[in-house]
Image 1 (spheres, protein in one colour):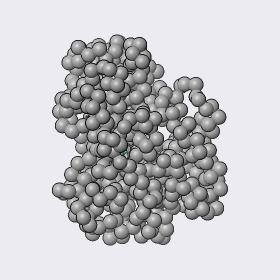
Image 2: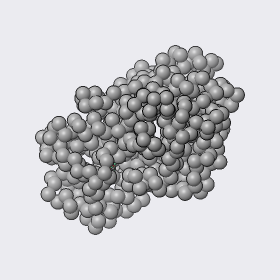
Image 3: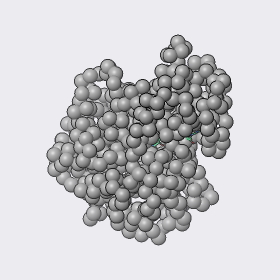
Image 4: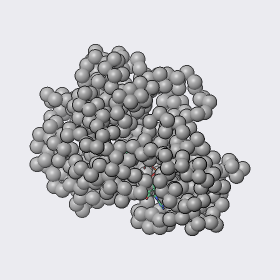
Length: 466
Ligand SMILES: Cc1cc2nc3c(=O)[nH]c(=O)nc-3n(C[C@H](O)[C@H](O)[C@H](O)COP(=O)(O)OP(=O)(O)OC[C@H]3O[C@@H](n4cnc5c(N)ncnc54)[C@H](O)[C@@H]3O)c2cc1C
């Protein structure tokens, strides 16, 4: 196994459970890829370097089969999954109970309930259909058709048609912006419905101790099966793994091209070269002397806070991603783990995590713009900052080579690349026994391990080891 991200570790577990002697090589000194935590600011302040909130991990059919709780993973549900402050001191809210959210959405409650309640009720049937290759016969065609009919549309015009209030429109736009797509792009609504349905079905939980706890639990279980992990060892060529009967690569196409060297047929080479990466992110972590002083009280009860104002503002920010210049008023995703997990900061102190989307490989320092957006809805925020740590797209890529140009989803997640990801071979490559298993394969980005799960099962099937 090349790489110890959530997909690499999940795939390694599947192989080890099948009885194969399995070794994971990780380039960085610590394991976990996008699920790592570290003291980025001051001693005693634990920050999630990449992922922080995990609706898709708690929904994952792959993780559900693993005894991760026995290996130290504990989920915390903040009182509210999401709050979205608005100018004037109010906030739109996604509460875990669907009915509470509908009541808070007032005149838009009925439309929200009509759209989303079948997805929430049938969440456990929906997830396996969308957390895998999309070109398969669905187990529940009507449910997938319903999700598809809601999802196909661009998020911004859809929200304007479905909802009447600015609050509901802004709330939906913020959730849909997790797509890292223009909200005018076809398919951008999918992420809005998916993550909102997850919020009601399973919440948007955080792991106690940070996202490193997910990687540690996976690694601990893998080792209990006899697996071996070698950290601080970058695989530069497939030649280094010539003795292995199977090689699974938790890397994106660009690194795979380098590792494979001249072993790949020209046609596959060209297909991987034409794989497109998406916009980047600019991230800031803070050590704080006090909780963020949100004007709207609901924001202090929410694990995640979407900071960006109205639908039009969020759409403008996300619309700028295909250009060269990031937005002056970016849409900012804020997570405040220490409010709900005392292990993240010394007593009485707090951490906060935030990022905004920026054009691919942007070099603009967004720290001040991000802080200004938070200050807009939480006057006095800057006065609480004890220390900060910023990461540009280039810094993120240095931290993890999979974050090409700051792209956190392993490649653009538009309709084409969600179906044929990264090529029509999906996990397979033309090389015998060599597979791809990162978020550059279906179902794509986020911590869920499903890319690794499907890739490892494909590898075992091909060897009749299933
Ligand atoms: C800032 C940020 C915020 C995010 N927020 C969330 C969130 O809140 N919730 C969520 O679900 N997801 C989030 N994500 C996305 C999530 O982290 C990724 O989708 C997920 O980690 C992908 O898992 P993976 O196993 O495919 O790859 P990765 O986690 O990227 O792991 C790949 C691993 O392979 C290693 N590697 C690469 N090349 C080599 C080589 N040649 N030799 C050996 N090792 C190699 C890397 O060092 C890395 O450890 C976020 C990501 C970022 C960057």
